Image (cartoon, rainbow, N blue to C red; front, side):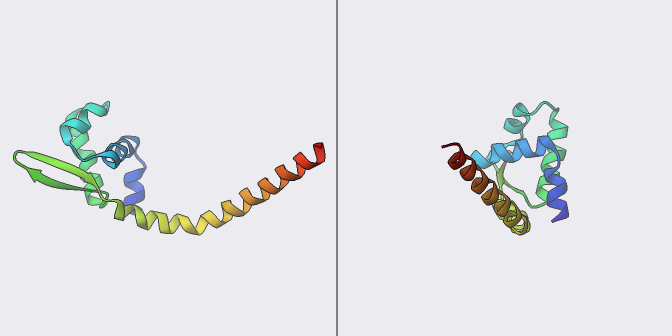
Length: 105
């Protein structure tokens, strides 16, 4: 999980994942969307591949990258332990807001 979190820590890699969330893309297409040179994009794609967040398949001379959402499931499971804390606080906030509205009437 640490490898995934480290991969997600970089803004450019998160941008790549957002693009791949919508559709598979070549490294060239990804490079057009990022403010970095192609070698940098290749390094980011390697980090994402090694973390298991993207997969690549050859298509003629091109490589097509796509998102592996299964890798994000591990992070989701870890975060789920903390959602309960926030949900309880949001429920309490909702209750206080409702009380405030009733008091103003």
